[in-house]
Structures are given as C-alpha cells and as structure tokens.
Image 1 (cartoon, rainbow, N blue to C red):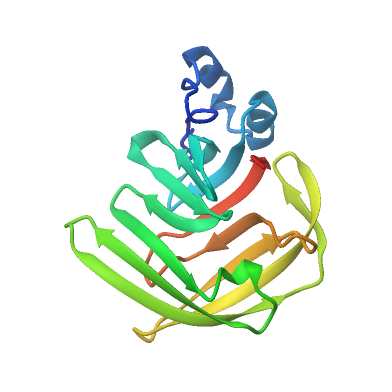
Image 2 (cartoon, rainbow, N blue to C red):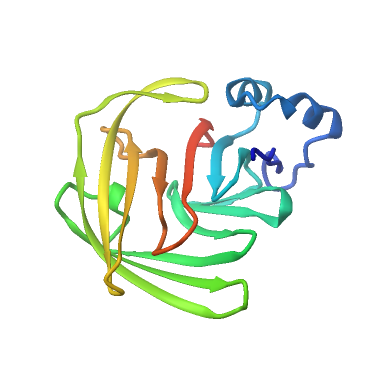
Amino acid sequence: MAVLMSGCASSGSTPLGASLSAILFGGDIQAEAQALPYASLDASIGDIEGLLVLGTQAGDMTYWPAREGVILELSDGGLHAFQGPNTRLLGSTYQPTAPWQQTPQTTVTLTRHVEDAAGDMQRYQASGRLHCEPARLTALPLGERRLEPCHIEWHWTTGDTTSATYWRDPETQRLWAATETPWPDAPDVAWRVARHWW
C-alpha cells in the first residue's frame, strides 16, 4: 500500500501545508516530484513507500522524515540508518569506504547495528565486492540519466547472503538510486533521487 511521505524542505523550514499535501495524493511519483520545489526521493522501506522530502542536512548526512514515524537517513547518498515501523537500523559502517565509492573488485566490510521491536540490539557484519555494468540511461522520477549499475553480494557472518544494487554517476560516483536488503531478513529498502539536494 502506497503511503504519502512528507517532510520539510530543509532545516529551519516549515512542513508542507495541507493544501499541497492534498495535491499529492494521486500516487503519480513523477507528478508529485514535479509539483514540489524541494529535494525529494522516491523511496520505500518494506511496504511503506512514497515521495520523501528532505527534512534536514548535516554535512554528508541527509534526513528524510515520513509519516508513521518513519525516517530514512542517508550518508553520502547511501543508506546509513532508518526508523521503520517495527525495527530500527541504528547505523552503518563501511571499511575502507562505501562500496559505491570503490573501484570494482575491492573488498568492502559492512557493519550494521539493529534494534528490533522488542528493543533487542543485534550487530551484523558482512563483506562483499562490487561488480559494475557499463553506464546506461536509467529512469528516475524527473527524467533519465546515464548511470552505472553496480551490484554487490553481501556475505554475512551468520552464513546468510543479501544483495544490493547502486546506480551511480560514472564520473563522480555520486549515488542516484539504490535497492538493498540491509541485513538478513530485513525489510527491503530502495530509493531514487527525484530532485537532488547538491
């Protein structure tokens, strides 16, 4: 079920007004993104999905608030944390750096800390190597952009395997879209940049 997500344009700004929110209930992400003059993402966390508006930015961190207490937090454009309906991803650490900033075949280690609905904390760790395809035109909410799809298979210390795909600019390695299962049995998380914030 699609749920409209809302936020603020930036720190110090006010939330979207009720009249603007009413315009956006049509479910057409392209129309919604065109109607908003703010930085926005077409995003989903599990079965909650819709258009997120940038709430605030602090350095490389961006915060994308939504209804029902959901918040998506990106670092350098990639998943860092989220507050979901039944679980919280508290943080993500990549060594040596985020995979979308790496050259292919570099081994990356990922550590994630998670809190479940009961308040229990778990630490997950995995490693993987990036494999990239040639850049091609990729559909985004406000048009097409030439992006390089890069895939990584995460091998977790639990014995599980998950995957992620990052669509990055081939020149700058800036991330424009991603889809991943953040840890074993986690809700899928995906987003595409609608209106960029940089």
